[in-house]
Image (cartoon, rainbow, N blue to C red; front, side, top):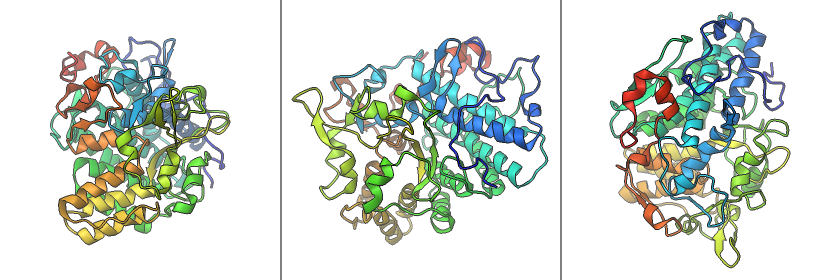
Length: 477
């Protein structure tokens, strides 16, 4: 059965109630007088509708009261912060004031984007919980829906814990996130340890891998998409042995194939979800009906859009050789007039079927396998990383030791630029953010110890949940 009839996800009424006001915790599901959401899902058809709504939430974010946080999920804010908070994307002097506080590292505890990301991803977690806990008899389709819900829940917790808690590689016993997996309108959890959050993520991904058997398209989780996410989780934890094993499982046993140099530009210009298993393992989808319109990621980056606020940092651009096909996506121009800059043309969908947000690509699996192999098998590390350089027109990597490791990290920066990974790599590697002169002078070196290297727990959540009020991230109190 083709679970979604091969059409892209549309915005649907979802089982989870909308957040009624800022006075409610974003961890709550429905008022106590309402029927338990998971018990409202009683049939396979109900699960299908709920699964579509879960995926839609990854893109659209939430509305709280009269304020929409639509761009603050994977449709824009999450991928943008991964490059703006790092050293890849900087704000043009001609801009619309979007993400200025992140470009300058001055965001406060009341920041709207931090609130929007938190609320949006917890909303999706609650939708996933409803599907996971629904009392529907198992069959292949029900197992698939529940497996996808486990994978989506893992993705949301994984994203939240990396932005709102210190890195696992620093200290897994530091405060992580409030964990909620079942319906309880009175439950106001404290922050669990980072290690506990990662334990849940890995448990969810193991469940997802076991339950899922079907592949429909790139906009839905599949068995090997769950394993690809787990490779990324293990890499973030510094567990290189398990990261390598998971990445190689996807490479050797999954159905996906790498995109080559001849098809690279066309691959990025294709705004449709993929059924051909080329490169994209999982992406958050938009279509001509359900999209973020002018708030889409492509409008923020492309000069053909309404904004085009962010540009390629000069030190990143200098890493691409003239023959590297990736450089084609970053043309030179002027903004403002007579000021030479480098534009970001990785996302070109500005009308109709807008650009989707890539979350997992096969190329990253090779890069994870390469990084995870450096300490035990340099020949394999070189082989895996050059699977990428050979398909991009870049010079092959032939270094050893510490230089090889740095070359692989640099290759990650080049390959995954503007996909939201660079900042999170710097976090797990416990490195300072060292930026070029494109950035404001006061925000060119952001130490790993700087309290703004993680986001504040939203003030609205602190106000609503008394059990978390004493657990704000240091520096924001």
